[in-house]
Structures are given as structure tokens and as C-alpha cells.
View (cartoon, rainbow, N blue to C red):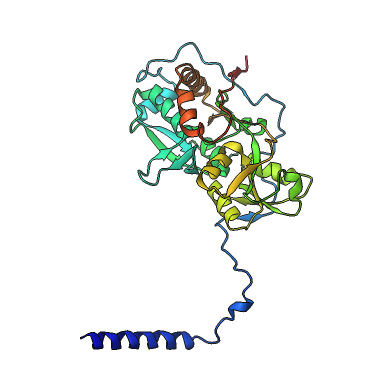
Amino acid sequence: MRAVRANLVLVALLLAVSACAGGGRPVDLANVTSVNRPTPVGAEENPPASTGSSAPTPDCDPRASFRPDGGLPPAGQMPGNSTMRAIQDRGQLIAGVDQNTFLFGFRNPTTNALEGFDIDIVREIAKAIFGDQNNTVRFKVVTSAGRIKALQDGDVDVVVRTMTATCERWKDINFSAIYYMAGQRLLVDHASKITSLDQLGGQKVCAAKGSTSIKTIAANPAKLIPVQVDNWSDCLIMLQQGQVEAVSTDDTILAGMVAQDPNVKMAGPKFTEEPYGIGIPKANVDMVKFVNGVLERAVAEGRWAASYNKWLGQTGEARATPPPPVYQD
Ligand code: GLU
């Protein structure tokens, strides 16, 4: 029996060898100097400047939002005819979020649930409307480039997705008060000596399409080669594979990448301010005021700090408090 099995193995080996030999000339490995790794779907080098709304951008304070009207209505009793009442009657808050940004909006691979600092804020808003945060949120994953359209098309009630409030974006949507102050930095290989964008002339630097980060990279006078992708996780992979020299975006997003991969590090100081606001459709000013009341209450009752400590307390970033709210009146 053993002999039969040994013969079968031999036959199989011979077949395998002849199959290889029949495939034409073998590749001479001595001449293989590099392997072209596939780039992520949608990756684009030196993209044309993004075509936002063509109207001129008025000067504004992008942090100034709408002051809450008095106290919050009791959960489950949203005022008649309000945006919040329509959401309450629908039974779910529809929230645009990310699923690829560790610490802010990511999918827990064990539970499949969305988690992170931005996700906690979504649940805070749902709890204020319904009194219950379970099964009262429908999450819709949106890319950086898809955030404004999702709000304009009415696909989502809010976008809570590492979104910088800018005057240009205020033309198309409203923002809540600022719930986190981030800033753009650099992420490089652990062995790299690079500490600023200026040192990266002629080299590839990755950021997401539709982000403020990709614009800042493209505007740098050192003439870097911006590489834009759909998701932040694509940037990390391109850096790991040596397809780009650096990733540059908010310190918050980069902190998540450092937590996931000890071979990369943040380098140099912050060189922009990225005040995060919750995006809300232009028509829904009542919702903006309501959300600002929810944010004030979450800060006052310690839930903002609890979420910060849970997600960002271990990243080595200085402990932060939220910026005090600024209102337009
Ligand atoms: N905060 C920046 C922005 O809103 C970059 C982060 C992102 O795109 O997710 O454009």
C-alpha cells in the first residue's frame, strides 16, 4: 500500500515538473529587479484641480455656526414640522460616515460594527432624537469626495466624517459648531528623514480625492506629485508598498495609521488647521441648531471627553479639549 502511494506521489511530481517545463522559456530571476504592484482602484497621479462650485468663495469664519434655540426638546418629542421630527417619524437617523479610518470611523472586523470618535457623535445625535441609540441609525458609507453630494441629494441627514469646515464648503452645505480641531501633517516610513512637504519635490504624496489635504499637497511650491485615492486606507497601503513617499492628511487620520502599523511614523509639525464640523444640508438650519445643542450637552456631561479618551487618548497626541463653540450672532 505504501509503495503504491509513493508511486502516485512520484507521478504527480513528474506531471508537475513537465507542466512547468512546457510553459515556454523560464523567467531568469536574475533579471527581475522590481515587481510592479497593482495600484488601488481609482488611484490617480497629478489629478486635475477638483471642480467645485464655480461661485466665488466669500470670506467667512468657517467655525461660526448657528446658535441653539433654548434647551433641547425632550427625546422622542421633536417639534412638529421640524427636520428632527421628520427623522423621528422615519424611525432612523441617516448618517454619512467612513468605514476606513481607524479611530474615527472604521469597521470592527470582529463584530462588523462601525466604531470610532465620529461614530460616537452620530449615536449621540440619534440618542437626542429618539432617546435610544440602538437601531435608530442607518449608516451610509461615503468617501471624502462624496460627502457634499450626499448632503445635497438628501441621501443623508448628517455627515460625520473627519470633515473640515471651510468657506468653500459652506457655499453648498451647513456645518455644526467645531467638535474637533485637527491639523495636516506628514506620514512617512519609520526610517525616513523627511519632515516637511517642501522636501518632497518631484516625489509622490498620497491623500484622498475631494479632501482639503490633496489641495494642500498640490498647492505646495515644491511641486510634489499628488496621488489621490478614494479611501485613506489606500494611502497607507501605497506607503507600505513604497508606491508613494509619504501620506499627508489630518493628524487624527494619520494617528490611526500609526496605531495600525508600527513601521510608519508621523513627521514634522502640523501645517494647517482642520476644524471638524458635522455637515448638514443647507436648508436644515433647525437641525444645525439642534445638533449644536447636542454637542454642547455632550461636552458638558463629559461624553465628548470619554469618547476622546477612548479613541485618541492612547495615540500619544496631546490631550485635547473641544474648541469652545463659535456662533454667527
Ligand atoms: N479633514 C479633511 C477634509 O475634510 C481631510 C479628511 C477627509 O477627507 O476625510 O477634507
